[in-house]
Image 1 (cartoon, rainbow over the protein chains, first blue to last red):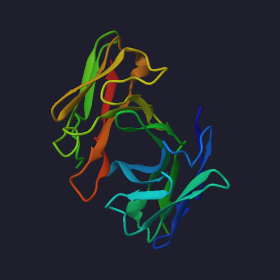
Image 2: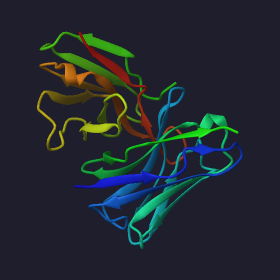
Image 3: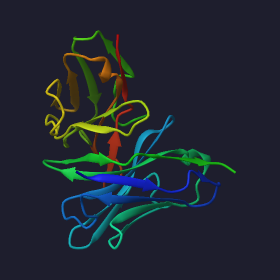
Image 4: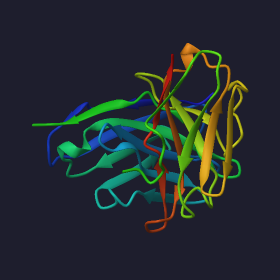
Length: 123
Length: 112
């Protein structure tokens, strides 16, 4: 059974970088069938997919258009985890952030989620 | 405003049946399978349905998914008070750039 454990600060100052990590157990970040995603949720924006990383003989990243200029998702194979960096944050980035595994059958879906981290952007 | 449209709320009595709709377009539901998620208060979303009508192991057959054209539907029969939650549909959308995963705005289910 896959488990995802999130870690990272709950408070970030405006203009700084939000950084979160998601540790994976029960699967490998280098899996050839899974993708590793970041999704956030706020009252104003609902559930919003931010991006993903996946390994298919080499690493691929996809990012949501809304954050593409500010986001980096990286995999750390030595620690079997992946991370989110969101630069130049504003109060609008305040949300609960989730990591999630993407799996596929005929199409993709998210079958395992982290516990969520409330990140508040405030000075 | 979400790309996928869901009713904000639905309600029904225990034991009854309820359906939750998810309306999209040819850029999303019309060309990609839908998944549904249940979010109990204070918890992360949980996968209920994938590929529009398949249930992961452990999900009771009271939950079902269907779809036609640019719409999808989640059905829940034999409602229980424990089913009170927010429900979200999601799929891939190609309206912008190479594509984006999108979710509906969510539907709050109240079991009266």
